[in-house]
Image 1 (tube, rainbow, N blue to C red):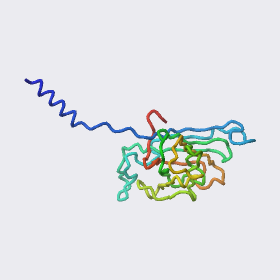
Image 2: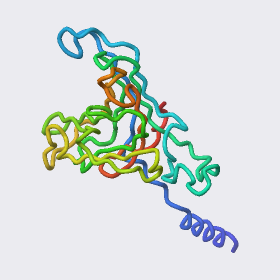
Image 3: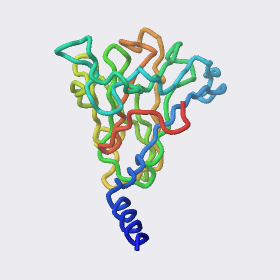
Image 4: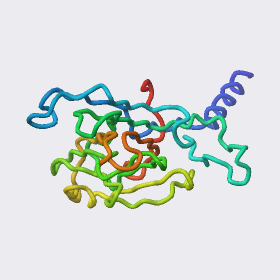
Length: 225
């Protein structure tokens, strides 16, 4: 007579257990590119080992979506134990060097994207062409990302004093992404180096909460750096 009671209890426990959390639809994998002679155009020399891309703990905003600081008591951070992953992109040399830091976004192939964006730490570089999204869709290649004039910039909600948020619509791509076009690939590219013509924060960017159609990626994927 005891066995049925045990089975009932097990069934009830299983029914009460939380369901598994769905996997994130996108992953952002850091990468670097160092070109061979001619890869960046006729007559251009080979690139140099001056680029770095990595998700680093302590570099970004809280991964749990919470605040990065306590405005009432700055000494009491509300998310002390959060990893704070952020994506570091660095090009430690001239703009003309055939090399870049960046990342590959996995999971977007076949989708129609409604917006692109990221949060960036104030004082690091966000210029006319980097960091940017290089998008290949069924209507061809596109450039998405002009922090100077091409996107909508607002204070980042997790730390509005120290971080900014930028958003781009498909229509703001160069050329504009056609309505209904399907994604083939998306890359983040950071190739503006330390040359004076690169602008503020030249050579280094820290970004987080990478936005693909409203889904924010703010940490490294499994088994990635």
